[in-house]
Structures are given as C-alpha cells and as structure tokens.
Image (cartoon, rainbow, N blue to C red; front, side, top):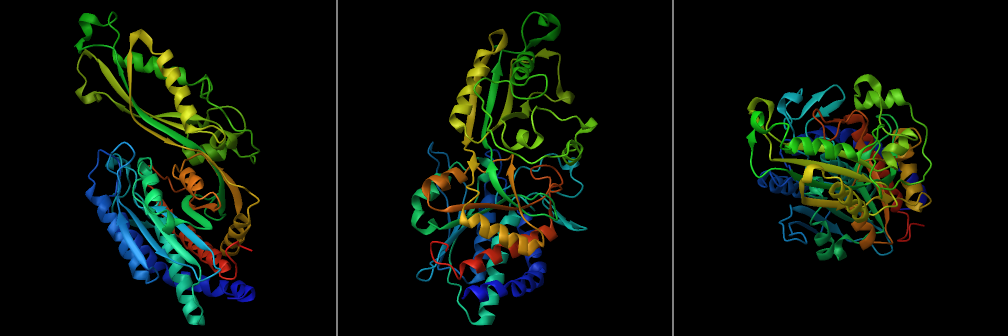
Length: 470
C-alpha cells in the first residue's frame, strides 16, 4: 500500500465499521453474559469460558497463524487465569502491532444497585449496560472490529494485510495481573512488537477522544486488625477492652488530613502540568453529594499525579446480624494509587510503615494478598503518539486530547520492561458516563464505533510504513 492509498482508505473503513456494528454489538453481548470475575473468591469456570469465547472470535477472523488459550501460575505459585494469545507474522519490512485487552471483569456487587441485571446486556438509548460491557470486553471488540474492517477493505482492493498482528487478551487484569509476567516470559517471541495498543482507558467525553499519556500505579492489599483473643459482651467490657472496630476507625483515620488528601510520609506526587478542570462538572460526574471534593492542588493533578488511598471493603458483621459484642477482629481492603515517579514497592513500604507505627491500643496487624502495579508515563513526542492522535481525530471528527488517568493498568510496566523499544499507546472506549467498576456500568455505542474506526485507521497507516514507523 502506498502513502496516498493509505490516506484515502479512511472512507471505506468508516463505512465498513458502520455496517459491522450490529454484529459487533451482538458479540459484545455474548461476552457480557459470561460472568468472568477473576477475583480469588469467585468461580474460575466462567473465566475459562470467557477466554474460550474470545479465542473463538479471533479464530473467526481467519487472520491468525496461531491462537491459543494459556494459563500459568504466578511467582508465588498461585494459579493464574487463562489468557488468549494470537499471532500472525508481518510481511518483510513491515511493523508488528500487539493489541492488548482483558476479558475478566470486576465483581457485580449488590444486584439491588443495578437498574438492569449485571450480566444480562441491555441497550438503553446509546448505551449498552452490563458488567464488563465497557471495561474491558469492548476493548476486545475494538481490536476484532478494527481487524475485520481492515481485512475486508483490503480484500476489496486486492491488497494484503502486511502488518504483523499479535493479540493478548488477559484474564486477570482486574485481579492484579499476577501471572502476566509469566505470559511474557513464555511468549516473548510471539508478543514482541513495534507498537503496543492497550485498549483499556478513558476518553474526555463521548464526543472527544483521548490518548492516555499518564497512569497511576496501584497498591492493594487486605489488612487484618485484631485487638482481642475472642469476642466479649459489650455491656460487660465496653469502655474497657478495645474492640477491633474502634482500632480500625482510629487507624484508618490517620491516612488522610482534614482535606481528605493522603497524610502518609513517603508517598510522593508527580510535578506535571495539567489542564484546568471545572469542580462542579467533576463533582457531578462522580456523583458527589453536596458537591464538595477532597484533596488539595489542581483538580486534574489530584486524579493523575497525586497519590490516593481508598478503603474499598470491610469484613465485619452487618447491622442485621450485629450482636452486643466487642469485635475481636476487622478486615479491610485498602486500594492505593501511586503517582508517576514513585515505584509501587516504595509506596507500599511507606504505607505499611505508617500503619504499623500508628496501630492504636496494641492492635496486631496482618497484611494479606498484596498486589503492586507500577505507574506509567508516555513519551508525548513519540512518532506513534502523533500517528494515533491523527487517526483518532479523523475517526471522531475532532482533535484528540492527551490526558492522564487516575486508574491503573498494572501490566503496562511489564510490557515496557520486556519490550523497551516498543511504543505503548493507551486508548480506550470509556467516557465519564461509563461507570466502570460501579453498578450500572455501560458502553456508549457511538464511542465504541469511533474507537474501532480509530484503530483501523491507525493500522492502515502502518501498511505504508517500514518497521521503524517512518
């Protein structure tokens, strides 16, 4: 393909993507119906079934020389979840692109919080509702839809798809990507690429595309807080013996200052410029009752470049089953976000040192299930960044923004370490209305269509490029 034909292919790709959307949506619905929660407490069979379904979708494209579902133990010997790997080599002198997404999902939470069943995909207006409808089963369909569109348009022109394509659809991103490094270790040759597209991020809005150039890392663990050998009558010993809930509340309150910003020594921020943001708009997007935000400093900096700590779960008797006893033990789930420029390990060390130094009333602390993911910064001047933002602008009809994201994608640091010469491009299908990880998660179908077209245009542009992207 010549440079001129690569430029005029856009209209054909747009039409092919538009015509293919009903089938894309139907296959996305089939994936959403599979409750592929990768957390340890959940049944592993649906995750395996989800992986096999993704392998079937890739097989149906007819594009790959090899497709396999593989599973490995992590470094601690814990069994990982199945991932799907597919590969086709490039023609001589052409680049290779690694397409990443994940097929596992977050737990659905309380069914009463959902307007529609979590695993029964439901289209309402422009959005498809269901757990994983956006994060990240839409990412899977972005890759497949883009490849199918490019395949068909090139076939109609009698031209080959000369770009090498590798696909990795992970099965445990929502559970810390614990065995991800083992996949890279065993399949480095098939996964090595010039460009890596990670379809698992956000857009400024449903009308404006974004390329993510900064991600916070994550540190997550369970903290067990114990103050008593056994439960005791609260009337007999209340006011004398310290119960675990008292200790937990007092300890957790030391993590933040009066503004809600982290107050843990050793947790660092990144000094980077951020665009201005509207506080009322952000409060509305987050559903903040009363509209009062927490933290200090520029609003986007609080989400992109500052550390945060959130308690995401508590194991304790619910109100209906609460007896008049002093609790001997409380377990909490702590989720921390690591600013670019700090390692996840140093963040974890500082946080654990703070917790142990501030444990009240002689409370004993135990840490369980530690997961660490590193932050990520993109080189904004990389050739691939310009190429992708151009493709996005053409597909969406407006310039693409370059943004930071407060969330984490732990495996990106492993990709960067394993393939240091590759250009990593973090795209996505989410928008502020997606509510990823929350009840009523949804995918805007217009965003999905434009994301597919963006990736197809990017790949088409590489057909005229050499392996060095020039």
